[in-house]
Amino acid sequence: MIQSMTGYGKTVLQLPTKKITIELKSLNSKNIDLNVRIPAYYREKELYIRKKLASALVRGKVDFSVFIENNGVELSSKINENVVKEYMNQLRTIVDSNEVELLKMAVKLPDSLKTEREELDEKEWAQINAALENTIDEITTYRIDEGKVLLEDFVLRISIIEDLLEKVIEVDPQRIEQVKEKLRKAIAELETNIDQNRFEQELIYYIEKLDITEEKVRLKNHLDYFKKALKSDDSNGKKLGFITQEIGREINTIGSKSNFAPMQKLVVQMKDELEKIKEQNLNVL
Picture (cartoon, rainbow, N blue to C red):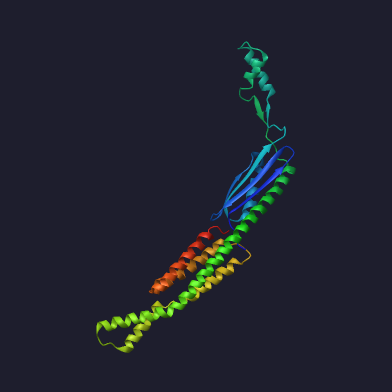
């Protein structure tokens, strides 16, 4: 079953002193392109997160974010008491002021506050990791749902191209007859005697040059292969892209050989449907 590279997942984890929101978004890209934004004290887990996301999502431009809202009394910055007292002692020697004013001045000076690095809590990380798993499941479900929409569109477009190919097959005998008639009229207008056997040989040679039997067969095979690839267990947008290139090659060859307005009109319609498939395939995982 094909998947889209477009997806979204979100998990909110409520802990005693903080609320953690994990958000995961992805868009189409040729390869995996990860952008990870996490708090500093989770940095030691960044490599693990990247590997997990790359393994699960395979391809796409992926934005992963962890947002934290503290709702407890935890403070990462504290007053550096010894430094503040030393500042106040020095200030007394140069200003005449009370203790409150000295304190106000001291806390504004460098190093009056010290920031304590918050260490990673393994129990907390276990909960975050479970939330990460849940978020990946959410975005995968989103991608699968989007893939179903793409699948329906692909099946429709391929069906239209198959119908147009049948019409090409139907008008092909008319095309060959028209080519023969044009050649006969051209010879007649020359008002000259010709070797009938030689004429027939040249006519056969010319008709063979315009013959599209092989192209019709190959195009049918490519369309069948595309439908088969849609039903495969994995989602391989690159493989589908290669098949569409082959489909396009056969359609173009039929168009260049057609030399017949009704057939050329059908070829233009096939090209239009194929372009829609190519555009949608850019979103396939």
